[in-house]
Image 1 (cartoon, one colour):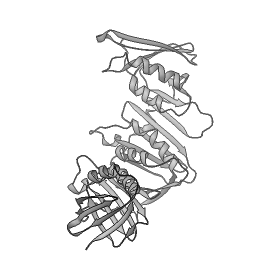
Image 2 (tube, one colour; image 1 turned 90 degrees about the horizontal axis):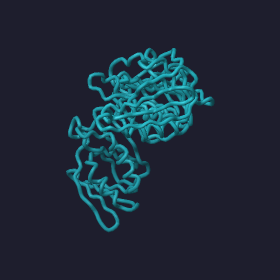
Image 3 (cartoon, helix red, strand yellow; image 1 turned 90 degrees about the vertical axis):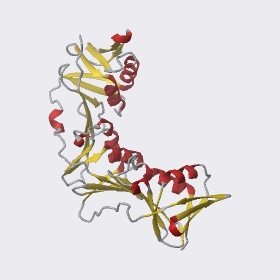
Image 4 (spheres, helix red, strand yellow; image 1 turned 30 degrees about the horizontal axis):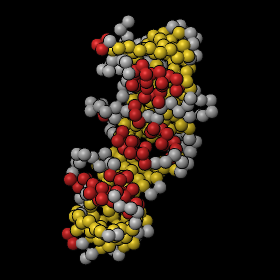
Length: 374
């Protein structure tokens, strides 16, 4: 029996590209190399999966003469559709899952696979449901995800930790050298729950949602989480284990404060880091009365650089070292034009926060220092 659907080329392509981002280069099973097309009553649901989770999207109002589910290898059809101008295309599925895609002036053929072995959607009937604004979810992930680890020995660090309690949503990520904590107030939250979202899923989610007041529905079970937004959803197998007590590593008594413009510090760091040792990435910050000297050197290649930047600092002189690219990463993520750094001594963690008197939300970055040779 032949089954034919007519669909917009651009809509199909954008959905295929979107869900294909979750497909692993080394899938757990051969069927996970494919994308599932589930055509039911004028709607096509498009899904892809890997061992970490599953991503779903859909297109409504397509023309079809029957229902069918089948799998298709995405690379060929995505590359072919990219070269076509926008137009309606007709897809015909025949016996043995033979597929013919027709467009103005031509066609291409490929073979699909039955959908029996493709992973099924998780059952959310017993899951706890929360709803948070898309802009909060996006902001929390953007400001923390890059600080998570890629550590086979400590898998709990390989994601973004959601720590949710009454009126508060915290996003946390750390690799042991740097830590990010984004705190948001939300009076509609009355649940207390926490989970670790894998870094890969967090990154896909960050690129898939837009900053708006629309709510994202979150269904949390013991083993998985499902997030639904617009016509899309993403499921993730949660990272098992207990996340470390992140509050305990944030120093409460840093008493030396520096305020500085983000562009000035960012630019100076970028210039000086070019001349620092590429292996260690060490940069030195020397704080004195209302100025900071940033320096780096590479003894092996006889290169060095230093730059003085004006700031607000009225405390004892302090010299402290950091891994330059870590410090630059954290500064680049500060959303305001000015930031504050707080120190206690050169061996203890430094805190970096935005200077922002308008927002009730809080953003805190922590960075461990490096030992200086002099």
